Image 1 (spheres, rainbow, N blue to C red):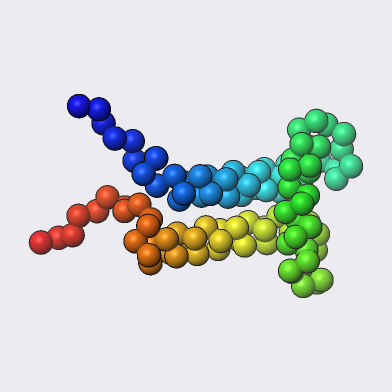
Image 2: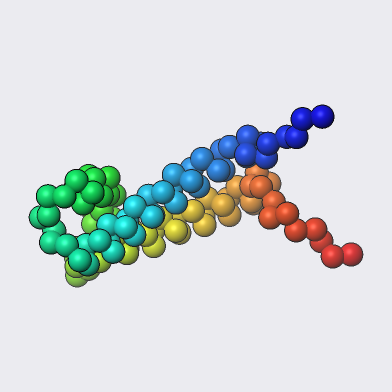
Length: 107
């Protein structure tokens, strides 16, 4: 008897959740690396981080007040993306479409 893969039962939850998490970790990597290198560094790793995260930081800059420094925008972006993940999970959970946490009710 083949075992069912729960990933495919909730692919509409897992794929967006994974993509948002990947973006969050990329922003975190850029922020941490940015503490040690100049912003105009020509290393391929830094350029890749910048190329992947610049569009997200541009969108965040448009919805964030001007007093927030450009260097803090990755943190603000991470906050907004974490909030998006939480809202997405909550909406799917409200409609009964999110995967369960695997906890059985006490009884």
